[in-house]
Length: 479
Image 1: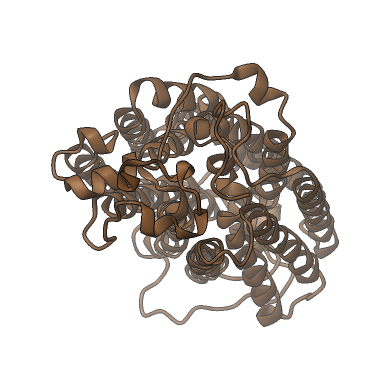
Image 2 (image 1 turned 45 degrees about the vertical axis):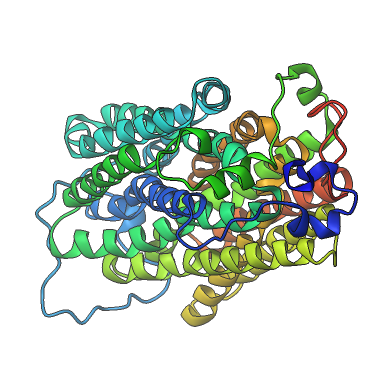
């Protein structure tokens, strides 16, 4: 019967919803997975970025010339409580700071491709859950490691990266079993916008915790939240719809009828231009993203003169905008595809261009605002916010061109896209050793140029249809 046919067998793709057994979104298992994985990515990014804020309070301002004053006049806070300075401080120089902030990614890069492969072969639930649990444990050991020395802190951050490296590939592999094709943008943006939301929550909360308690509590409190997520993930998530205990039969049929899996064509993957289009775009976007993620609090303090209290809140604004536009973009992208207004490839390329060229323009503009605090924060916010459109662009293009191997493909692209996190902060700190506005302009120009080159490459070589090597004999339902 028509209801038993996979979606790619339908004679009229525009009538996809009429030919398939549908299942409502409200209270569904697939949307429950989306929201719980969103919580997981909130935890993941909270654990990743809290050091960026805590670092401002961990430094001995008396011995670190770069932190002793700001280029612009300082903004004095108006709090009834004085800043708590009971946490131990260190005299790390700019180079050491760069290595500490970038060390996370030296572990993160190692487990990308293995994470995607293992998730596809053995299931993503425990791989992802235990990976984040390991990060939680090492996060809670951060104050101890810092007290032992910068080398120990770097080692702990590398181990945190090893645990978190499996998260995106494993989650992509799980969505390959859970996300119906025409709901991918919605489900994946709900899930992955947890990264922006985690940054939004973590930056201001870290600043407040540093101010009213001390910086060590940043790692203890976020670690405790991570433990809570792990227990929820353990009890409520399953690898596939078939293994889920409470999913309705109607939803199970709806999901399974739209999906198909095959063996892994490694050679074809690495020689596919559409795959490399995603890799280049992912690398380029992450250069700007990781540079700001790790160094925006430093910029807020050393250039714009914001206190630790104000720093976290203002540093979070760009990611609040990114979270909002990512959610909006996910709804808009699927709407455009469902109604047949634009093809998948046009949607992916358009959203990627907006999400990469737009941020480049506003990032460079931010470097020329001088001490105009309102304009500087506004341009940085718009720059990062526009990047949210990439969540419906190249970021989920893996599922368009090779849905069965999405986790592995994300592992490949994220391996290359981790390199900016390793070298970006080190290069940026080396270029801003004197913390002048001109030095930061150079950092912004480099990031913008890399962003634009990535957008151009993806626009030329990106595809929106399932590739022949991905599913032999399968013709995509939408070109």
